Length: 389
Image (cartoon, rainbow, N blue to C red; front, side, top):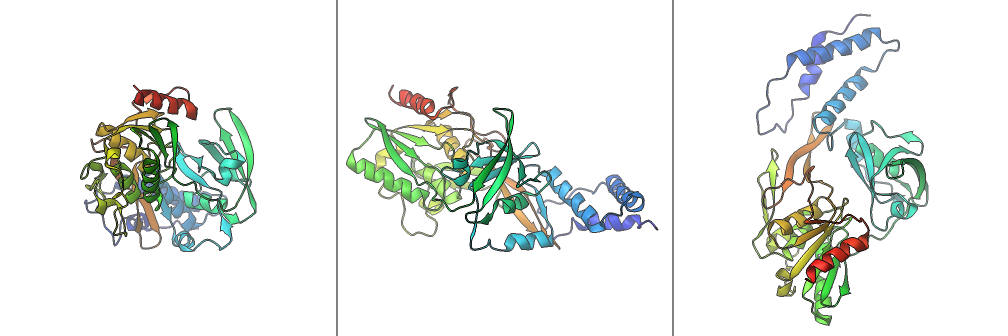
């Protein structure tokens, strides 16, 4: 067998840098020595491996590895075939199980959503996913893992997980079915106090929050408030800005972005244009003005992520509220999917920053008061005690 020419493998790698969407910053010189090493390894495998490898599969694997090495938490390369699968809608009867995937330390971690089939079946936040229906997930792209979790409504999927708290490996069966996402709710934990629970920042969260506050205020005004963001995975940018805007003066900076992408260098203010979306009406127009100045506490935990972290950081930076609980997830990155000649790459192009310039990504939000006891009641009681002083 003749060895493929060295320049053919190099040409493939060089082609990775050609895209109709070139980066705004000029790329540095491509390290030729490393390219030659890659080509040499490719050629050696082609000529000496006991079973001839698939040429394209080798190079696709090298590309996937390069993207994941450059962006361990979020980077993915999709072949043209994988991208086509991504674009196809799920089957009409397909259901998921209500978990978020997080990629940390080269492993997938599960975060069950509140009230989801996964949560009800016993999946715990932080469980490390080992296999789905017996198939190992190590080395799989996140998109492929999500596909494995989907299936016909009423079917079950077996998740094999490692639970660090008990140092045990468990296989948990979860039924795939539709479930109602929890809505924003308001309770009265003590006289003169209201607790607003926001489980997610979806399209209706801001309207639900504003209405809940208005109804409670009309029934009986209060002078202190607790914003409960524990377990909240974040969501839409408009909802993030809107939730923060309920408690901040108009035109206050809510968040910024930094990075190299088109989203970098943006500043988001507490203004109706930034949070009302397609609606002409300001969802906060009937909000009692006292809400923006009354005593406020924010509850967070390790599953408070993304937009929920931004809200906590904004209220903390502006000294508008004290934050109670556990350090948050540290999920503050913005991804871009960039088409290539064949396929696409997804990678991080910007980071969310607090008004004071703190990066959320990898750092999270440190509470003003860390509550050692992770129970929900202990965190709530700590916040209530602070507000009652």
